[in-house]
Structures are given as C-alpha cells and as structure tokens.
Length: 139
Image 1 (cartoon, rainbow, N blue to C red):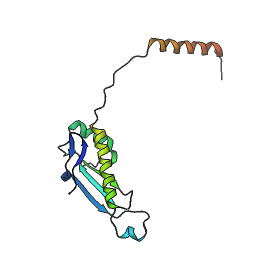
Image 2 (cartoon, one colour):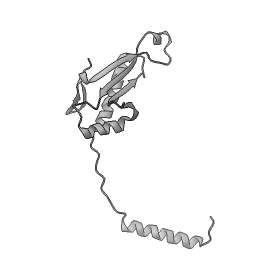
Image 3 (cartoon, rainbow, N blue to C red):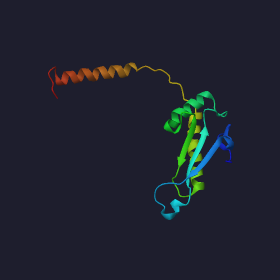
Image 4 (spheres, one colour):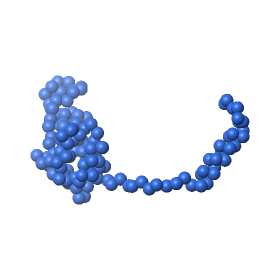
C-alpha cells in the first residue's frame, strides 16, 4: 500500500486510491534490464475519487490528456531511472503536479475595450502609410 499523497493543505489523496504496478523497463541497462522491474505505472481513479469536486475532475481530464483512460483512470508511467523507488517518487510527483494544477481555480476573464488613444494611433498610422506609398504601391 502506498502512503497518502498530499496535494494541497486541504487535499490529500489516500494511499488506498493509488495503484502502483511494476514492469520491465526498455532501453539501455545491460543484463540488469532483463532482471529488474524498474518501470512504474501509477494509476489513480479520477472519475470515482471522493477527494476532487466535479469541476476539478474536469480540469484534471483536460490537463491529463491521453494519460486519462475512458474509464476515468489516470495512468502515469515513469521509467526515467534504473531505480524502482526513484521512479515511484517521480510518478507521485508528476501526479501531484497535475492535481495541484487542477485545484487552481481559473480566473474569469473580464471583457475590456481597446482604448480610444490606441484606436486613434492605429488610424493615424494607416493614414500616414497610405499617404507615403500612394494608391498604386506594389512594395
């Protein structure tokens, strides 16, 4: 069983909600690569999680992209090192980063208008350009 994952001061993912599986990693490693299962897959069921609200779950889905399966399980694969323990920590840190980004409420966009002075400058620049180059300018 995994230890709990603290994402934010009020949000802690219980260790029972995280599933870790190990498999053999590809790439260089000599004879060691055939014996040691150092690749880590960390799975977290976002869809059935009681820790996240509905809006947070939708933001996780948008941030996770193709790492989120159709069944709502977020899978993070780590095989950056040849050490199983460091790969587990890397996968947990990547999950923490995704969840903490999803917890941040997006600021609502306020509609603004183009300032009158900017419009005036733009029109003046167009007028000057037209006067300099004339009607039949081919650049």
